[in-house]
Length: 528
Image (cartoon, rainbow, N blue to C red; front, side, top):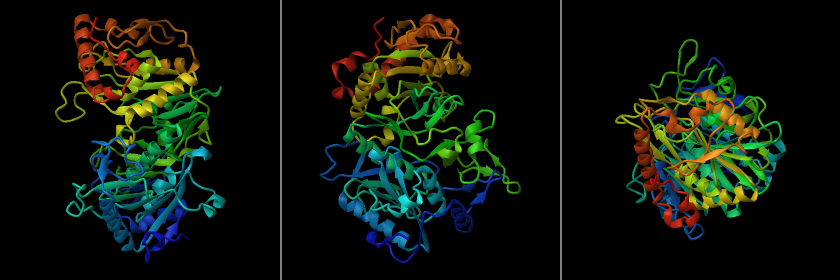
């Protein structure tokens, strides 16, 4: 048992680190709509919120951390009194439940940087989700777990109160206090808020120790070479990092210390919309007993899931332990990376399929975090639209993005790491005119990066983006590698490239005051 009276919780029956089978039983009997899929996964529903609520994220402004935080639209402040009000709402809600579930686990596979995390929640589905996403302690480690570094109070079934707390402007609020080590969730049952809350904590703590926290996937080859994959949704990060010839270190959250790379999480959290055994066999096969399926539609009789049905949400998900991935790298710790790969789906069709970046260029592209939405993906999107997310994960940053970029560049220089920009988007023209770069060509590029075949490859300077375009890559036709050569109208290419350059530099303006002259010199230019 675990004593929750120290948090003001007394009365409910408390279950700590239940087995997977018992969490299934609790969910089936107590969670509305819970079911077991035909492959044995637990199906659960998060209610009205089927994704994160980044606009409802708050951080307590307090003396110990306020000078470190990048305040603004990403990190909005809440007072200590306001947080105390939210925490009381959460505690009162949890005290009103018949049963509570506690999950004690670790964040960070490297023992030197590991956090002890406690989850307190009222839904068995949430407990199983975090059982998967945190590192699971052994019986001995659980017995000697001690005082947790951070505690998550998940009272998602209780709305926040905008009238009671000035900083709260909706019935959802996810608030973090670095001083107390408490994280309070109100007004949303979406399980991903817990996972990303812990990631936000790591994004704050790790840079204080000169460790780079990263929203990326990572894998390792037979020779021990490590590659990191950054990219926003739709760029192919999961597809390209899940390689049958390489070991998966992790699919989403990592840290890079002076001694190497380690996964923050104990599991994977993958999108399942349009999932198929042919396209994503590793994820498909992981959906079995112990996995959680969120917000999916299934046949009432057979319990077979229809992964093409987005009537509840496009953001259908599955959570499963890293051990469900064949030949995963366990423990999820590896040496320093040899390659950092930035993936972008450029729907304008002007970025090269592969280019080499200097450390300064890597900082620039890392801070911008570019990809593009294509027509038809959202209402009102009729032509490609540039999308930027600092460090390829702005919603989880705590420090100014330049802090993370400086750590990236320093580690690249000190450890002789190469950086690459890989376009998985369009060639031969923008969306609607050209076509998506052949996946086999992209895979060939990634294979050649991992094998080292592109280290000494010839490059030519991109006239607009200044990156070193790789002009020869085994398995990729040479005419594909120079994007301007794939367009029927070179002048139209130039105009489109200039348009994107302006959007790059416009977005970078909000970071320019913190950038040094070398980074500013790496910015794209329309001088041609």
